[in-house]
Length: 361
Picture 1 (spheres, rainbow, N blue to C red):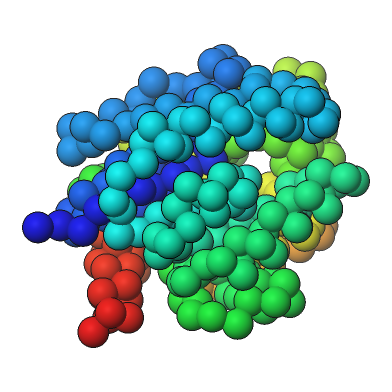
Picture 2: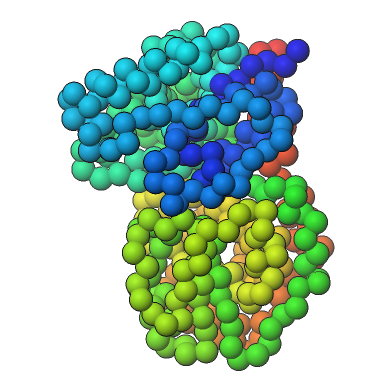
């Protein structure tokens, strides 16, 4: 009989597919997984696309919809009560509770105080916040690290982050990866556009870390390129005739969607949050068989055979000019296949299973 895992994620199940969705799907091969997800009230940012046949146990978790209200004294009391009631209704014997964020640690400590707790530290959660929210998130993460039996981190930098926050227990590097469903993409079948006009594509969340400054500068300097953005948008996209926002595309539709574009990009501002990111999108970009331009920071070293890196705007401009002159693919199909097959979510989940059950031998 499979052990039971309560898998609590801090985003909506129908948000664009990310690490929590992929790992939950693959871990269900080893555990009886019940997914509890944070219901997103802004449904315009949600794409109804993450329905897995293997998941019968999906439970939405409701909070007060306004963060401002949740932060008031009375609002916090009501919100904590709402959460506590929901978790008590879910309660039964679980062998593990898996958390992807510290936001529910207070309630989890009350309801599942004796259950083995696993923290999947997939981002520097404190880096998302500022002011009083930053302090609250830091306090919650410290409490989570004190309570956690095992911690997985998605990047090397996060290992240093949790050490600085006082964690002294077992922690393991568990990089991001790629779905096996994308491994069937035949890279050599992609046609390379060697014209002097190129269509660039970005896939992912569009938020404050997106480098619009360099993006707009690039568009103004190169009149023969167009940049399209796809994904949930949390900020206002600046107006430019060749900067196009296309909304959200279902993950299953991405291979066909990407086919009509020439270059894939990741233009991020390298800040406290980004230096700890192992970008899922780069694994997926490689599977699409397109040239890739991305900002460089140390966590990106593993992608060096597949990506045109830049640090400054001048370096970005040089890389764009190279691809305008010759957009021949920088990597081979065999090299991409070798890299991707060793970095699937299936392999990541198997490693989790080996680690967790090995700790009990």
